[in-house]
Length: 357
Image (cartoon, rainbow, N blue to C red; front, side, top):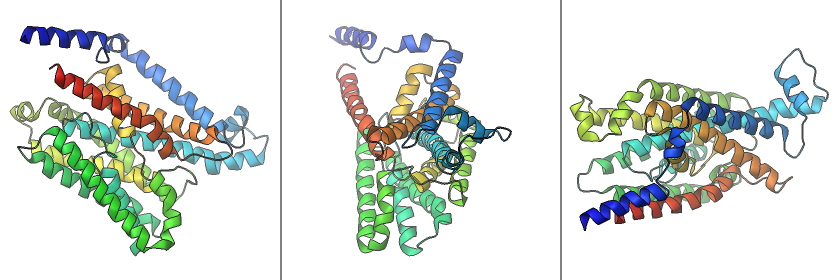
């Protein structure tokens, strides 16, 4: 009976959704080149298309100082609206997708992501609390978002250290933490009606109205620094992906390293939430798709996940702007439409893997 189950499990993995050997057989250089091309193409489309379509020559004219744009209005739209929005989408996708990769590795749970287990909610609570106590202090929004995200990370870490709590229980506990933090956020919005209107797009997750100013410089800098640090210390993350026992045998102080990466995760997710709001599902689905193409090698997985996350957010924002043009659908709503089916798929896939294991 045991041999039958093992053979059945092998057959399912070879015929079903687990078989991704075809993607892994593609040379790595080609996979990065293809993804880079699609990311570049989606950015060009996001810059050119919208309620006002802008020709490509005006885009290059706005980028290169020696060229002269054919329309001054187009130049203002590009420099004040389109460029900051696309740049923000790239950094938002990169930060949240890498944060999701870190969480899935630390918790050894395929369903962990900043939006699912409460990190985004903690960052959102920190920002709303700041706006309630100190209205108009947008400069401190990244710090408030980081503190809120780190608080949620600590709660999750405490639960993950408990020896008798399963991975599924940790996931459900994270969902409960997310619900509690969202309830506090809604309570603050109810008690402070003056900030409710301005916080509406923040709760939905939107890139509309983003400008290149001091509100954006600090979050983008924090994301960039956090990404560099994650990549420099990637070998520790690679060791943790093998399990705590093997990581300890390799001489790694697992609790200290886990807290270190949780701080980086809070920095990434909190920085994104501070300017883009509560974006969901990108940190859940992107690491899974990236693993299908480059495997579990963290050295390849981090940059590929970052690029794929950028492509996902830029494309979702573009679809949201074009779907009901001239009206816009916030990027958070579009990502939820795309992410929810994949989340359900992951639940059924894990159930099938446990049934035939």
